[in-house]
Structures are given as C-alpha cells and as structure tokens.
Image (cartoon, rainbow, N blue to C red; front, side, top):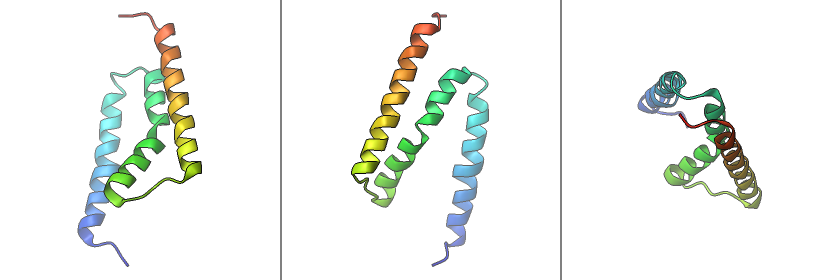
Length: 87
C-alpha cells in the first residue's frame, strides 16, 4: 500500500526539514559533548514514539539494547558533568 500524499508531506516536513532545522539551531548553544549524548539516545526516542503512535513493542533483545544505550548515555553525562566546570 502506498502512502497518501498528506503522509508524504508530513514525513518531508516534520522529521526531515523541521528536525534538521531544530538540530542546527540547537547546536549553536549546546556544547558538542552534550549534543553527542543526546544523539546517542536517538534509537530510544524512535522506539518510544513507535510504541506510542504505532503500537510497536520491543522484544528482550530490544529492551537489552535500550538499557545499554540508556546506561551509556547516563554514564557519559555524569562524566561530562564532572569534567566541565560550572559556568
């Protein structure tokens, strides 16, 4: 089944154009180290939104991978907070 034109416009406007614009705008104010932590969690957000809007469910391997990504992002964030002096 082919997507209807309104879905194509949405996919072109929101995930592609809007997210690209917001990413470029935010990178002007966020340090690269913090931005890399946020980008590393992208698969978690994709899985969460797929679960909310599409009813997708993770299996055991998916939950394990999500846990590893979350743990890595959290530990990296804690390391960055220790290294960077407060402003």
